[in-house]
Amino acid sequence: CLGVGLVSTFSRGSWVTVILAPAVLLVVGDWRTVLRFGLLAVLAAVIVDVASGGAVSGRGVASLEDPSALQRLALMGAGGLMALDHPLLGVGPGGFGVALEEYGLLVPGLWDFVPSAHNAYIHMAAETGLVGLLPYLVLVGTVGWRLLMRAREVRGGAEGVLARCLLWAWATAVVLGLFEWTLVHGAAQVILLVVAMGMADRADRATAPAP
Image (cartoon, rainbow, N blue to C red):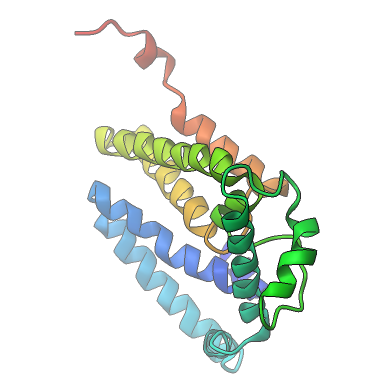
């Protein structure tokens, strides 16, 4: 059901994210899961593509000249210009849409003035500058490292499965940030739940005396 929903969105960014994110499990040696998931994803894509008359492959090929994809690249460019002009503090939290009225005119071919850079890192840099971007990158790196260490430490049992699932989920959020402003609506809540679960210690582990 999740696969059908994902395909039905025709979101290329989501498709790429789902394909790339499992690769993080290679770092913890879980290549079997990556291989099984990759084969399943390819098989599902082929079946859906054949059943839909080439809709999936057509969507991928169209990315090279699709107006919506080009507009997203243009919005990222506008966000980059904002960040360069306001490197320290940005244009202000929530100010991307207002600033786009000025900076969007500097990007050739941009006509879809959507108040989002469609990239979490560029969006953060545009609205909050280095003051916001650097702590955000520290958060991304710290949580990712903690989840990676937990997944490498705990191998077996339900706890090991949960550790790998949380690492996979975090990698999904990090990669998706290249295509979307992720800290919005329900996605932000899910991401924060993953962070909370990943950074929490089991009670018995946390209170156990040091050897």
